[in-house]
Length: 171
Image 1 (cartoon, rainbow, N blue to C red):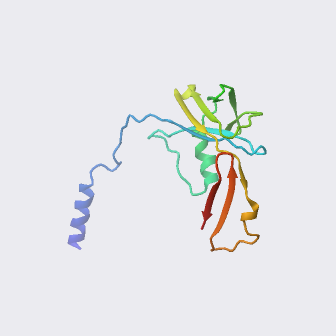
Image 2 (image 1 turned 30 degrees about the vertical axis):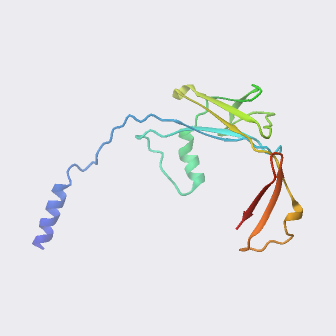
């Protein structure tokens, strides 16, 4: 018993300050930009603009994505950014904020087209640019796909694109 008391006394006294160590950093938040340029005419293209958290911010974490997004991500959303996309022909499309994302009416991305993005988040003093090229439209070769697929067996999908025929095996 005497050894246990001695051990606890040394342990408690040796731990130093009880409040934890305050870590200081010069880290500055950056932009996170997620964009979906949808080539499907029935689905909307959109862009989500958030910022990374400051080290002293407590944004929490939850395994429930919806709970996490609703309670934490909204504090990181940037709702007043200027978001522009322009294509290789210099046609400029401005996106506007609506329901946690930036959208543009009547914007229909074209296949095999290079798009550039410019995001100005003036309220956060953050700026970003980027570019991407949309893929070609694919047409599945329905005659290459069996009418019945068996789970846990390999099957093959073939499709044609405007660039070149492609083939993929899925296991």
